[in-house]
Amino acid sequence: MTIGEFYAKTRRALATVILAACAAVSHGQEAVDAEAQAIVEKADQIRFPVEGFQVDVSIATTLADKSSETRKYRVLSKGNENSVVMVTEPASDRGQIMLMKGRDLWVFMPEVSQPIRLSLAQRLTGQVANGDLARANFAGDYFPKIIGSETIDGGHYHILELKAVDRSVTYQRVVYWVNKKTFWPLKAEFYSLSNRLLKRCRYEDFQPMAGKTRPSRLVMEDALKEGELSVLSYAGMKLRDLPDKIFTKDYLKKLD
Image (tube, rainbow, N blue to C red):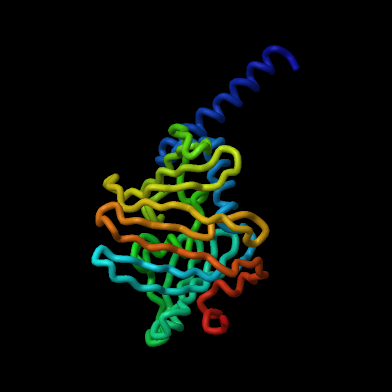
């Protein structure tokens, strides 16, 4: 290669990089922080399997007046992009099923002939939004960056800021603490579009489930109403072969 050819090749490569950067800016994209992205992906894999799996979730909610209720669900999920959420208790709501494909979410109700479109941010029960149960894909829903570090009870943690890729995701901003060594998530803060703190959560009681040590309890506290919280308890998690046809509107009534 001659010197002239080398400089010409270098100019073309540089032009490609500049055009890509301009395209990203013109589309309002965040710059990708590769290290932060890898951290969030590993934490996602700690929280739930990438493979198809089934888990039973009990949500116990306590209100400020100390009244409480418990609801139970069975979740079938595959690849963090497809989920089915079935109500198992109370008996009066049994038969209600949520279907998530990508960031599209519908609820099917026995007494209604057509599915109803839902928002991931819409409240499901207590402090739990639809997206908290149906979708757990922080790596796919947010642009992450490392904003600091902190030592808590002898553990060393990355502090990450996650900004929503668009307005369809569950929260518009998340501040997230992830262990530097194990990539276990510790806690998170969830913010609205106006940057108001909505709720806090803690990942607790790590147990062996479906091949990895995972948090078996998630405590979500209302940041605006003191004393209101929901505790999600995960049990019976197992890997399961879930064909793609399960995650279709036509198949839901065949689920057991």
